[in-house]
Image (cartoon, rainbow, N blue to C red):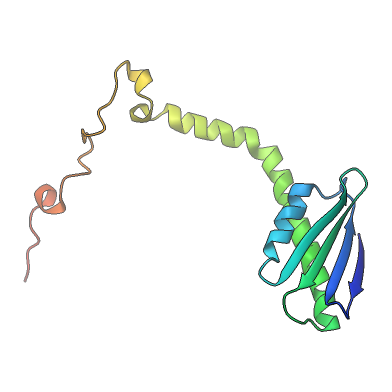
Length: 138
């Protein structure tokens, strides 16, 4: 990763290798900074992606260097999130599928009949007072 600080212009230019950081990870890291800076992405997805970060307010040279470090940390964060997401996708789909399969009221076709949305088999729509009696005051 190559970083170039343009102090007079209040700007940073980072050049990233797209084989290390995916475009999605770059988008995620960039989004974290949109409250403090204007972000512009440019480049070739097969060779190099340039990230232009221009401060919305004036940053000191030290603050610009800190921004570079923060951006690098966010890139790592989003790259790791993406990797974990990729590796855990099948198990998440399995868990959600099992949860939906175990709830026949959400899948009327499993019961062979359609459910009426106005019926209340769990008694959720019954007011508290009717269900448990009026509140007794001391």
